Length: 399
Image 1 (cartoon, rainbow, N blue to C red):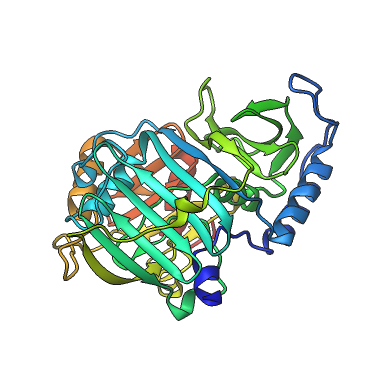
Image 2 (cartoon, one colour):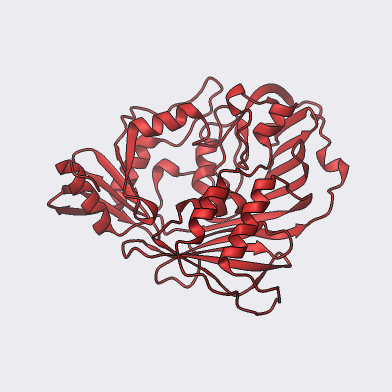
């Protein structure tokens, strides 16, 4: 069970330590502001070092709680991502994983967790009339989909062994983009570099816990992000909440954090599962999130490249050839990419310049440019940054 547990554990990468160490010296470091709640003063450097040690140890405290993800990106309604607007989604129905991915781009959604160790935990995505549970108890790992009345006994693919992650693992052919606060914090710190001002904000209370706040402020003028605020538990020094603020906005465009949290051992019955009478029982493989599967990373590399670095990064790729929606042998499928692209174009405004012509879609924190010569450029940057990247790609210069 050791390899299987590592593949689906609530893990933290040791590599993040190097990222944190690099980020410490990239911006002004100021003392924490005393406020309610009261915590011992910490500088940004001290907090980042504490987080690095916590992640390096790999120890995660026993806990139970509810994580809420809220997104208000300002995306238009796109036919390729139509589906349930709630947090429900059945991995056994056509297009369900695509609908769930779409629904997480707007509104609020929950993930309930019970964690007693790397091989004893439960994650639950509640829906309006259903729920999806991942339950690990020693060598027993189950995925329960109440909407499909299907229980899947999971095994981990060999390529995933030793690749810890905190995404919600589902059988091959499905995926959930739900991020935990730890995942979001790690990604934010990986982005932070010499173009980031790092400071300590006022202490806050998250899920009843006193927390420090690390504030990452992008320096580039082209960035659409005003700042990213990472709340760290004052005692456990684990991320409790991550908020992304767009420039000119008073409310976060994206937020993921604990709504409730208890650092006590969950009751053993939370990890007990027996398929109910009449349920369909299947065998499946736990699927790592996108970017953790080598073949997907290679595919992403082949289909595009990143221009620039840090907050100015722009993804440049060719528009895919998508004759029809793809489904697997069980009838499951993702979003209709052709309809999605048509929806993007219909919602975007026509633009042109020295780089060529195309259509531009701008949200609070993301700009997307679809050129008439078949390219797609996207980034958390102003349209002008996309135009420069398109021009540089057209002339063959570096962005």
